[in-house]
Image (cartoon, rainbow, N blue to C red; front, side):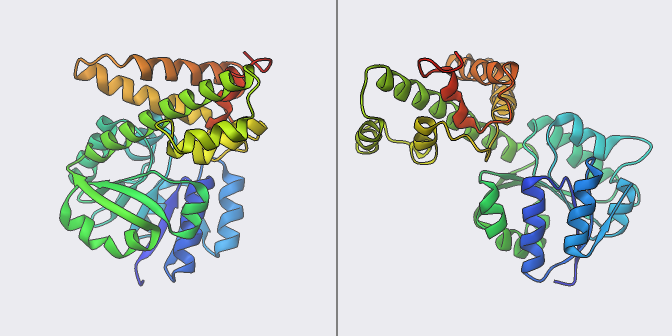
Length: 294
């Protein structure tokens, strides 16, 4: 608990992780976000510093969580020459929670080790509310000794966690998780859209789905929202498009064709093109239900 902790990227997930750790008694010393107003608001709430420079974040903490949006953001915070987190970072631990390509996690791991720091890949498969409640499911990769040194913090953030292997390996599994989740969501939207077009009661259809081979986790989380057109964002369509794209790029590297993933990525990209990217992923139903946006 004496370790000083900072967060880079304090959107909905990062901010709630910081709140959770403060509730657990950890010393949150600094936050940083390109959206400076949001970082300052959270810093005031937590009683910590809102840094203007990445190097200042590293100076203020022993353990730095990063929760950024994409490969470019990840490279920017670690590899930019003028200001980055690896400046004077010897002995620090970076816990990197972004869903980015495995290759970028490996780049950051190598750069951190060159600087005398440690990088622990910590991929999340959970929602905003679970971040706040300390009920994340975490997939981790990196050095086992670093994992063990951060285990208490990991346990306080998660309901379950798995150390999967070396750098990039957790990101690979996270890409698989989101790929299958997105495909399931798109398939559910098409099934319910067809049921609605046939005039079926969607509550009844969802109940039948739940008792048969059509059951899935997304039926529970998204089925009602698809029927009700309630798409408050827990996991955005824009993020779904990005993550399906990551899975597709990994498949190309190993010479695999994934037609279902490609079709799902195209649907989520269409949502973004239609201005629906900030809807929850359940909003893919807007493309499949008769008389909606399709």
